[in-house]
Image 1 (tube, each protein chain N blue to C red):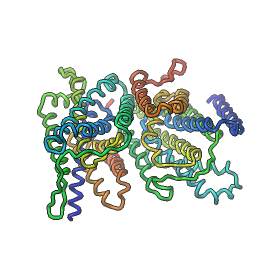
Image 2: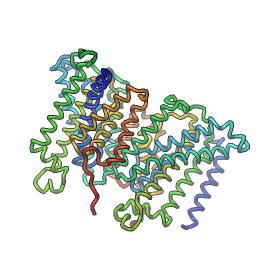
Image 3: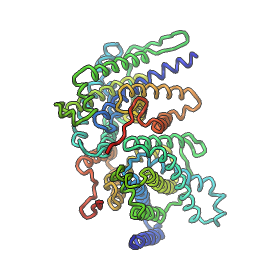
Image 4: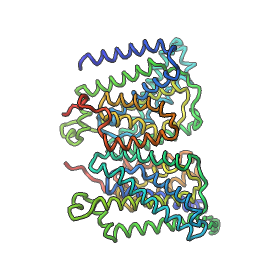
Length: 296
Length: 312
């Protein structure tokens, strides 16, 4: 029983990170209807921003750690807007396939540019927050896990508030509902898309910092696997659906952690995809998504 | 179908056979690159059937290649000593047999993946095939009988110029002939407009699965060639990036164009060699090129009016 609870906590903190990344995929899909493959590399850049800024911003204390977190989020938001402007905006109204390949190109560029810029070898991620181990009976919870959960919950609530209670959030929802109609009622689609990229990339940056706190070895290719799993999470929850992405992220994190604890642990990385294939077979629209029929 | 195409196939096979007979005199490095080009053409032409002509988007071609590579390598490496006497000790019988078995198993994998997932469209299909590719990789990493993560070693070097170019020619011919048959027109119809094709009484899912199975078969054969060229297999070599490499060949060649895709496969494989001098900058340049080309020439590199795709 203790072990079960222990794995539950580990799984939740991993799942919260997947949820943050998955939200970025789902938001971009919502407004532009394509998979932003470069998203997982924005996540990687987030970790590296943290790595380089940590000594300068006084990491190791709570305000210092938070400063690093916000700096990484801001840097990733900027990067996301730049990527959208340079690579995706010229492709508006082109076929999804073209945009998809471009996104893969951007992803490769960030990975290989990262290898040139940061060096290909893994680096040790510095401590951002003071660390302690908390004991509840036989349960051990690290303070980092609690920080991951707290930050994720805070960001999810913020996101919910932005999307549902602000003008720009309303515009985002309008755009994902019907882009043409949105521009007819005076929404500046390009501005909203830029904002969506900023928001999603900031979440990826936060995810990158939180991930590196728990798995403190970072390298330029670190984004690929968490990125793919987060994407699976987004599809699992129903792509384009924000609560779905959060739910999917938590589920994938939990399943993966429980599998790691069993004998099949070497198959851990395949599990996410097996879940994906099953969900697409039985509920192609995802857990919380609505099935759409193509009309002529 | 004009008999001209069969003549082309025959001519290519004969030329490949003759050149192969003199391959001892060719510089081994050049030979290695040339055989790599032949395998790339096979992979690109087979993916072109799925991604180009049928309008699906598969990101798992490396996975099917891996199935073929491992199956045929296991046949020749582990069972080779027992099987060879059965075919009179003739490698030229055993090797193509192992390739075909590898291809068939890859086709079976294609059927297993395609049958359930081809009801999905576009992005979803891309992601499922991507996921399948990763699963295949993880499975091979975990099966100790084929070396696990350490890789499979000691595969006999049976691949030569004749087999690589012979297979490439057969692949291009089969894809071409399939598309120009009465049945094959359906692939193009599905690519153009699935709903309209269905309204005309075609079964889009069936066409998609057929394309998938045929494409996977040739990917598996190409995998077998690759295994017996390198003599060594590593599951990590069949990852997402390998699939992307093949997809890029198809895209830059112009989706659904025969000649362009062949040229792109040749160009992209050959251009890797001089680019090696650039070291780290090679992949940066490659990715930048990909982005710029998608923005400026999404229809592909080799699309002149001369080879314009016939419009229905």
